[in-house]
Length: 90
Image (cartoon, rainbow, N blue to C red; front, side):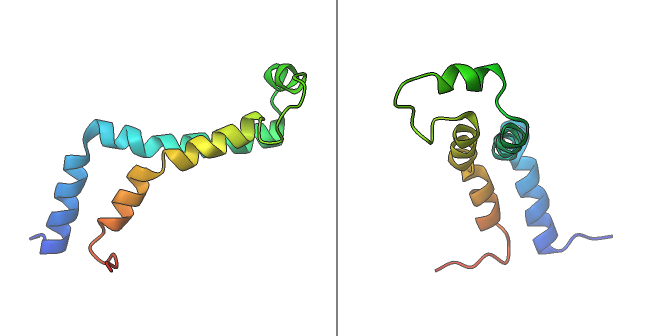
């Protein structure tokens, strides 16, 4: 079977991504799962320690921190999505 131009570009893009690229892609979903688990199961001892601080921010828990980390590490996903052959460009 002969690969078409689109298939060849996708394969070369995936090969160029390399191990560092795959690690970058793993960060955002990992932090999202950690936020979900922390929200569902609670923060345990760390949540108790952090909640004893006076004037604690409502965004000071572990789940919001993991969500922010997931958002900050979403750049590799955005680059991958924008590099798709059918991605809209303005």
